[in-house]
Amino acid sequence: MSPDRQYVPRGVSTPDADTGENLKPQSDEAHSAFTPPLGVPLPPPPEDEHPTSEFAVPEGLTSEAPSEPEGSAFVPPARVKTQNNQTTGGFPVITPPNGIPALRLTKDAPWQDRMRTMLRMPISERPAPERVERQDETGPAVPRVLDLTLRIAELLLAGGEGAEDVEAAMLGVAHAYGLDRCEPTVTFTLLSVSYQPSLVDDPVTASRTVRRRGTDYTRLSAVFRLVDDITSQDDFTLEEAYRRLAEIRRNRHPYPGWALTVAGGGLAGAASMLVGGDWPVFFAAAIGAMLGDRLAWLASGRGLPEFYQFVAAAMPPAAMGVALSLANSGLQASAVITGGLFALIPGRALVAGVQDGLTGYYITAAARLLEVGYLIVGIVCGVLTVLYGGVQLDAKLNPEAALRHVERPVIQILAAMLLALTFCILLQQERHTVLFATLNGGVAWVVYGALADTARVPPVAATTVAAGLVGLFGQLLSRYRYASALPYVTAAIGPLLPGSATYFGLLALAQGNLDRGIPHLTQAAALALAIAIGVNLGGEAARLFLKSPGAPSAPSDRRAAKRTRGF
Picture (cartoon, rainbow, N blue to C red):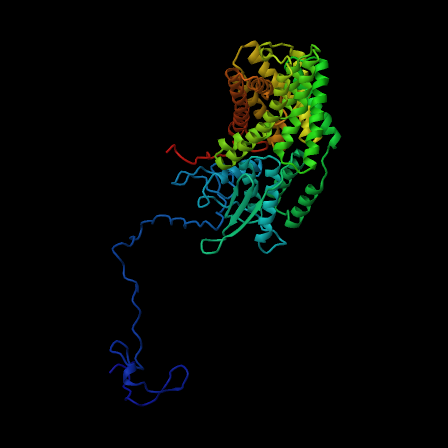
């Protein structure tokens, strides 16, 4: 027998070789046929405990690189370096299989472009931007962030901003405070935003109704600066945002009420000189417009709806023109009435409505255009009431005056710039934007006059080109100042508004001449649509082909607002 093996009777205790303690015998159930008995050394382990497989890689061959783990919609992706050794801001540079373009959402681009890129993507495909965690907050206060988002959107929508820009602002504020899976919704009077933390958590939804609208572009510009600070500064707290928002709401209008009345008179006088009036016509149109403005303020103070305010505002200019015609003063009554209509045509709401329709917000666009229709009907009612009375009194209101076109380039350019200047005051713009908007209005009239009078281009096409340049220049100024484009665009399109076509169409209707009135009104509608489409086209051209200020690369791709494919 080998000296390493010793026979130990069953049931006898043996001392342990290491500790010296006696080991108790184990029962028969504890023994296995493959387990060596106590006192017998264990056999050496096999060289390879894990048997090889026919799918195992033989020695000497390299295996494929491990695939990257699948990303999650709730975890921001890691920063990726491009071929030029530049980081992409946390988003992949390759195009995913589903066709989403690579995003370069750098903070050098305006927040409108950054948020539009994400806004036009489904929420399931929308990447989460890379953010720096705030030191004084453990997590996003969801109700407060949603409330701040809705309050900012309310000021933007009430100031006349387009639905897409309002949704972009809502998305930017929510993302800045860590609410990545947000879905904003904007209609004509209702704002809502929904946040879903994950697929298994209940969503949190908040809404707000816009009940009052006001024209104050100074407040609108302040809100844009607030959104830019929130989206670009990582240490901008909620308390600071609420404090800034309260200051914006408390600020008074930059121009008093009497200045608005004088500006309305100046706008009507400048418009009357655009259509061939002289200095007496200028003052007559100004007096009629100021009387209409005061009458509209009186109706507003009595709580009358906006429709009746426009009816009241349209009557004094028309009455002034009828009075000049009855007095046989030799002044152009049509120019006086046309000037008063220029001050009342809702060009701002028209441009915003067409822009919403072109960007895919059809419900909001329909509501805005319906509002424009009601306001124009109010103007028609006020003017037709006075014109019908003038026709009954045998006033010499000649619709053939529309055919007499006077070319006075210098006077008309100065009148167009004055019209844009007074429009800026009516819109309560900041003083540093007035000069740019005034020059933009002069450029618009120069382009229109060069095309319509010199090159004999049809008025609709000439208006479209001039409005396109207005939108292009306005978008340029807004991008380099990181502000809204409305202060630079809305006042500049004032000289292009179809005041004369509207007046002669209404006059023909008042005289019972439908064959002459319908074409004039159709031309007025075509000119209004040409202005809105031209402004939107100029803005889109600026976003698509122009480089963002301060950005080292080309602007990021923007997905179209594709809702249907025509079926």
